[in-house]
Amino acid sequence: MELTKNIFFNTDKLIENTEVKLSYTGKFFQDDSQEVFIHYGFGHNWDNLNDIKMEKTDLGFQAEFELGEGETFNFCFRNDKNEWDNNEGNNYIFPLEKKQTELIVLEDEPVSLGTARKLRRSYLWSKKVRLAIYKIITYLPKLISGNYKKKVNETE
Image (cartoon, rainbow, N blue to C red; front, side, top):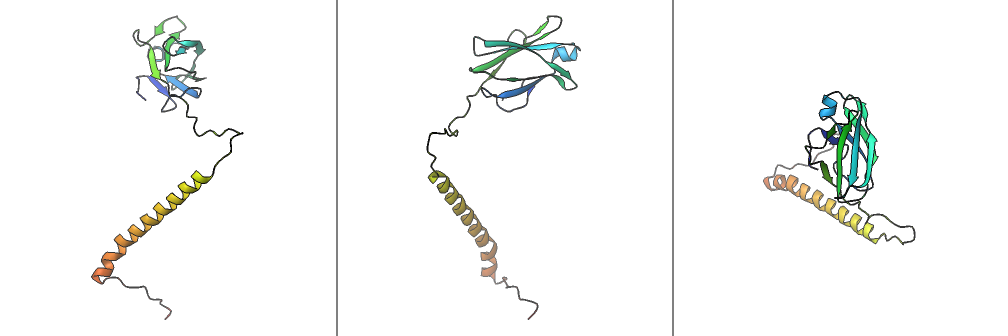
């Protein structure tokens, strides 16, 4: 995700219909404003418009909320004096990603374990091949040069 000065999220990607925590250390935090609100919406039309009062902490003003649906997450900030931080008129805009749904199994659908078994088999074979290559690289030069000696039991 593209980083924006003084705005931090608790996640790498903003995904629709997920909880997110936003921290703001911009001009209102630096000017020691007492109350800050985040004003936000989704998509180009700012759908599902909302205002949330942010909590003041040592790390900045923070708020937790659920992201809605849309192509973008748009927001700006307002303090208790009705002053706005809207990124110099451009607002703060971040892309939203769709939630991955192909791994969700519905209750009525039968589950096939064939794919899981194939993946496990291929994983085991790759592990065996890596072990064989390691042994060849380690012991073959010793065998060829004659420096390979078997360990002899000390009890004999």
